[in-house]
Length: 283
Length: 351
Image (cartoon, rainbow over all chains, first blue to last red; front, side):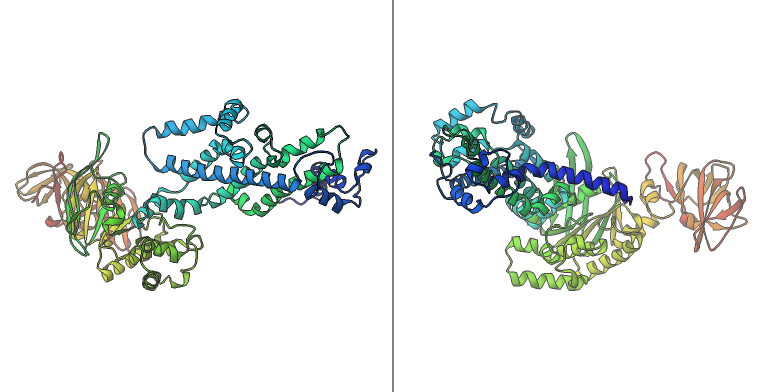
């Protein structure tokens, strides 16, 4: 659209600004709440401008006891747990689905399509559906309250396998043939040709999967009983219900603010590759 | 350097046989072009020699080794693909050196060889670019360079020029030929373009429907096509085919015109006349009812019918000729330029 109509321009800007305001307002409130002391946050009306207690809240939340009167882990520990879980899930998913898609696309073996459809069918079985048997398995394997228990049950991904399959199918056959003439074996071809050609798709998927892993709520809630292993997303919810007292909004909002930072960082850092990966067609 | 021998080579997909008992011997240093219409099996044959397709039965020998079950990398060949198949994420230098790197050559050796090949192909300035930053012709050169650096016994070309524009194609064609003569490497080149085939090949293997129609030098194919198919395929514009009857050294056309020639053949035949062998002659026996003149500058093509019949016939005349539709023109032809083929089998009936 290369139209130049002033009124249209103004209207579209208004619409965009409204959209941004709607999305940004809750984040602003979160930020403002994280800068006041606990007392101010219990009074009405809620403040709309930042207060002066940001560093105080920041230190108490991240390093200190966190919520007073409870025995939850410090927030840095939760951030670490969340980070470990999200990284294990996203990297694990990418590694496993790259290898399985590679097998399905480039090798001929009996029941190849059968396996593909089996993988595909698991799309219909998210964690919520298989939660009891999965819990049982994880408990029997002694993985409760561990990073393995947090990530392994979520580590296989039909979506990612399917996506990589589609990506590999767009790599021309001549690439494989040319590599064969150059003397590259299957794994050499995988590392030297397939992975670099899928680089942007891997990045895009990493962003999506990292956020998926970071936002896990139900599964960590089930298998972590030890406060040292709790993740940040589930803890925010617990903070609201903690103890017999009114919620300490300043601390909770600071925690929420901290919980937003890693996903935002991942998105910003990988934005360029992410967009390329979703739109690029040139192979 | 090596010779290549194909012995009774068969390729089937399931029950469908696509290549039927191909035999052929390619000499050391020879440039052989496999030519045929699309779907004739020429690419399949090349890919079997490369090792990208399995052999159903028969043998492929490179030098004195039977290579049927060897991986492509172990056959000591290099291949240039139709769409170049350059690795898009590697620079030109890495593309060319990739095969050597896998073979475990030292870095210094790879660099030396890549620089040498780049000098031959004049792509030195582009060595650190990515393929997408190159034009079609440059990519083509890189693909050739990738073949050269490996110093193979055999070059295989799979329609390498078909993605280039007409002018560049002619230029690259000559360069490929010069390069091959300079390096003296046995080469097999697949194309559907008969002009490309004629200009490049020491010898041509004409394939049709999975059968070898004829295997010989371009001039042999032009002068003495072994079958109707080869006769129609080689030469441009293509040969005229007229139904005719031969008896005791005279050929009778469908409209009753009689030509001297035909030797010892007899009975009904298909007569082949090349348009460029028809010579305008007021007293000539062949009368053509001209329908259309195509003026190409150097020559003029006259399209029409053999008068009194609806058998189509084309004559090629030097210079500018114009004729209104419906004009009758007479032509003569030398007896040695008559080609006769069995109408049923399509095989040449020798005079």
